[in-house]
Length: 383
Image (cartoon, rainbow, N blue to C red; front, top):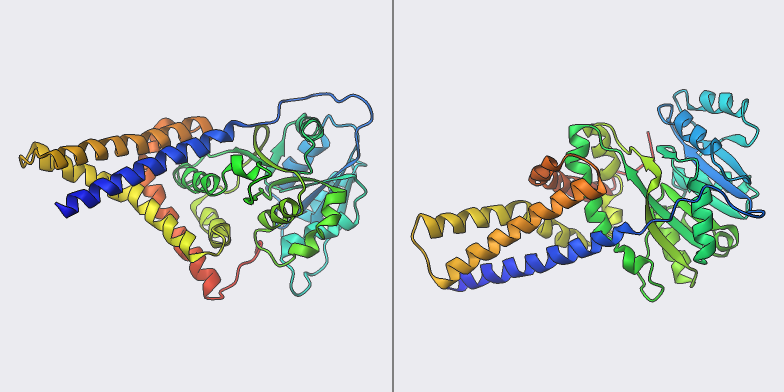
């Protein structure tokens, strides 16, 4: 009897959690409207793009920024000592477009993370009233900048961050990325991030738009120079000083393909997942528990209760209740996965059935990331 009671309590807890999870992810529908033209004299925006070994992405990213409808911008690409053809591509583009400047980055000083120092070098060369930090693996629609500048103006926003639409093409991208990204969306609920009364702050380093005056007031990148997750660190500084922080999705404005194969996914996430979890053991343990419960315990529990009731003849009130709860729980897990596949990531719905595999790999990523940081193996921006 006690075991059945514990199982019933467990399934009830997990059901409530998943319902809250679905509610938190659903908020992700907030998005700036598409605006193709602005009236008057809009402020100068400095777009700063850090690049290290980005020959696959450099041309596509920069040309999408050059094609912006926004009439008053400058683009600063900072090459952080790339070993591939990135710098040559940037120089060739700069010879064709006069609003693109290329900076050859200096060696990273002691105490700095490479990306943060690259961005800081770009800031020092910029002139804009607004600063837009954008990653090289993004591609922007021509109306991206007009849309976000109208959005921050109408909503009196000091710092805006956007989660781009995620392009997922290969099998491993579609299995792993939805699980990892959905977990991060839940860890940083956008409703609470955007609520000035909440202390929760977050941002996505792929896209951060911030007023220059606010950036200077919080100390800029020197204030977060040694932070691997500088986006969240900047967001905390902005919100902590009472400025208006907003975090939304941007499916219609900007897209990204973060990784293209399993090895890239593994290397990319293991460098920062422990930091994304706040470097808190309690958060790591809770995440691992929830992942194991959703990916494995729930299916096993349903199978066990199904066999117990239908084939072993155990038709007590408790066993029937557990069967009903576990069936509902499993259906909720599948529905959440189906909804995320369709609405958030635009991948075939049958990938919702690969969630257990994705969860297993995600658990391995968390463990590996934790080990890397705790053991002092070191984390770098890019090789």
